[in-house]
Structure formats: C-alpha cells, structure tokens
Image 1: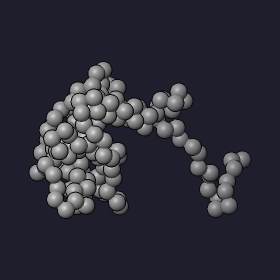
Image 2: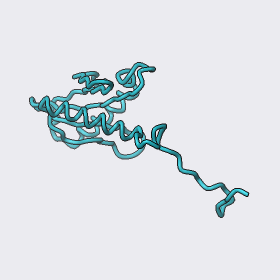
Image 3: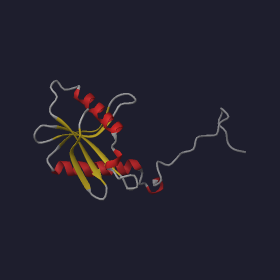
Length: 141
C-alpha cells in the first residue's frame, strides 16, 4: 500500500533541479557561473558593479542580472545569457521582445530611486564557448 498523508494524498516527492542535478551542475549554478564570467569581463573593461540580480518587488516584474556604472558615468543594465546548446540559436536568440520589456520595466523601477537619472544603456553579455559583450544591444521602447 502507498503511503498517504493525513489528507489522503500522496506525499510530495523532491524533484531534481534539472537534468544535471545529480552531478551538481544545475541551471542555477551554470547561470551564476556565466554571470561571474560576465562580471569579470566587464570589470576588466573598467565598469563598476552597483547591484547584482536586481528584482522589482511583487510578481510579474523584471530582473536585471548586473547593474553597473561605466567610466563615463553611464548606468549600464546588463543581461547575461548562457546556453550550453545552440539548437535554438544560442544565447543571443533567447532575448526576445518580452524579455527586453521585462528588463526595461526593472530598469525604470531602479531609476525611480534617483532624483536625476544618469544616461543609461542596455548591454548583453553572451556566454557560450566564449564571452561576447554587446554594448547598447537594445533600447527602451
């Protein structure tokens, strides 16, 4: 007989975090490693980290992987994308219009706390077999 909890339902089973969970190579870990690589690349280029993984409050908001300041004072909102498989176009192909809108939404929320917002841009760092930095990859529409 199967075990049941007091409500007569089967107990929940733990699901691995991804196909590589047994090896410890989860999607989250790969994403963090890609962000670390992107951050190192940008810092070598002279950008300064202001915030990592900035999220808007509540559901349905947006998230920015890295918020940085360039040498000229420009505030740079950075999206880091990594793909291990190029079957669907690689990392760059994964930043569609919906994703861009969510990033812009989060950037606008971030800017609300500033009396005078500085010049801004949206960069993308692609981490595949190498690191590729796309300055001003898209605009706020």
